[in-house]
Length: 369
Image (cartoon, rainbow, N blue to C red; front, top):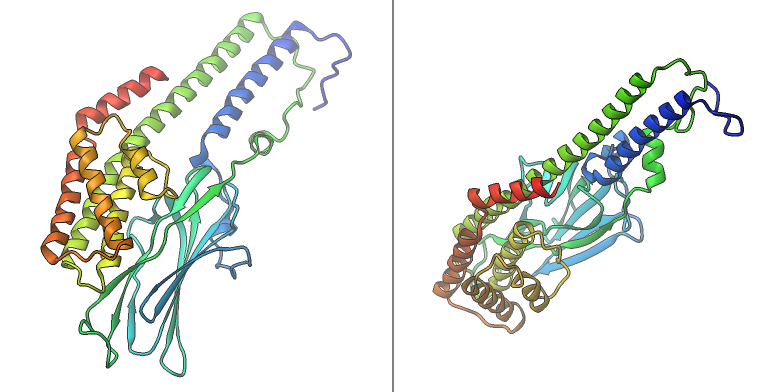
């Protein structure tokens, strides 16, 4: 193989073949650049977790004597990089920790795919324990993503503690927004075809009918690939919207089984309840606003045309009630807490993605393609 000599005369046959190959590579390059979910992953990404660097993102949550810290690194990952999420829990002697693998069986943490998972528990001479969970994650796409809150339970059996000693309490860590940088277009093209531009000059003797067939095949292949990709994305979007309902109902039922909160656990209980509804709305209506305040989030969510006036009023009242508990020190009784949970369940049921709507969305996406 030799490089094309652009300074000399080029035969029509060579020129046509060069255009055909260039067109095919251009279409394939565009597909690679647009398909975030198909990024190849380095096998070393699933290797044993490393020590968090100094610039790792860290957020700490405290409940009584227990301190939980979630650390995410690298702080500025690129699509295809291994992303590590480590949950560190410190508890004194007499406090037990129940921290199962989050969302077990789905191999996902929010929208991130779990590539590997490790855990370790160490006890000190005084009986205090340090528990670690480390997730190796793979981002679904570039852009703003978020690592959802992690949940675990603690049971304080020490003497002299509150009246609810021995009763499990749920702890919810903060969610962590993360900006995923896209792959450079040049790198994607290099991965696709490292020998781009090397065309054999000795390709004469090809008939024009054969060249026309090659060009037509390339055009059909490119158009069909783009159409198939857009159809896949539309179906994938519908699947995520459906799964938003299933996940929200499962978490609401689990929260209901815990029973209404008391005075000391009201904050964590209502944080978990509002987090379930906000996460449902983000997935159901493709709202990417985990860093917004409640007021800002309501402005974005209630602007969705699919929500009726009744739904907007219900959502506003629900989130404001949760904020009263979290920030204003309001302590509802058991009946009011369960009524709030029931209202959240009714909102999720009323706004779930139903089959006729899903079919209409798929058809609209196909027409747009």
